[in-house]
Length: 206
Ligand code: SF4
Image 1: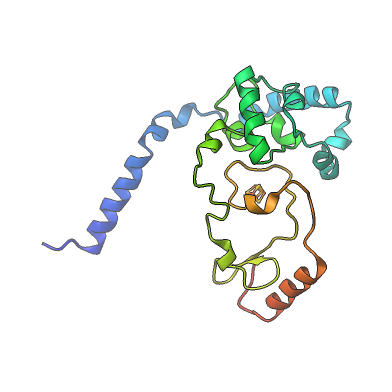
Image 2: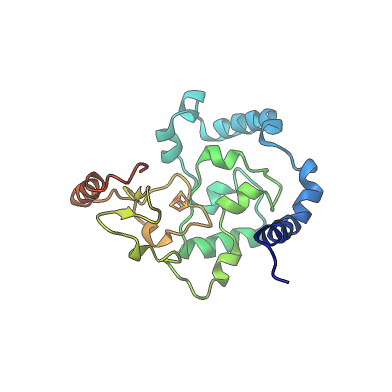
């Protein structure tokens, strides 16, 4: 007998729930960000002391950008790194640049090698396993209708105005743009992008 749409949907929902059953088992034991606020404040104080900085500096995004941590030796002042860890980070960052702001680094549990923010922010040796090294996995060269725009959705798009990020996420889909030198996109590209947006009234979110 042919399944009804509802039956198909219920089966699909069941599959989705089963997929996260290990997470559901430990959900209650996962610490929440707000529970860490005291610890975060303590870590911030430690960072400020190491960087000889003030609370005003800490709250200034320019300062955060200027003081991004970009090398293993500086990184090891803030969190635990084994010798193997240091070698891996150095090897990966020779291919895929790394940088992390002091604020973001301060959120990492310093002795936990599996801290989720650490996994997102610091290079992992697994990145070297990517034999295909597809630098444009989302094929964004085919979703660039003008200037520095990426348009993948009906009513929204992004303008890639700079290749500089406060942190280089390890899961980034735009590594091909990051390179070694920080730069803003040239003015003609920005103007072409703005013109495209002006001419496409269906775009409501940039
Ligand atoms: S482009 Fe986005 S995902 Fe990639 S490093 Fe920058 S912030 Fe992270």
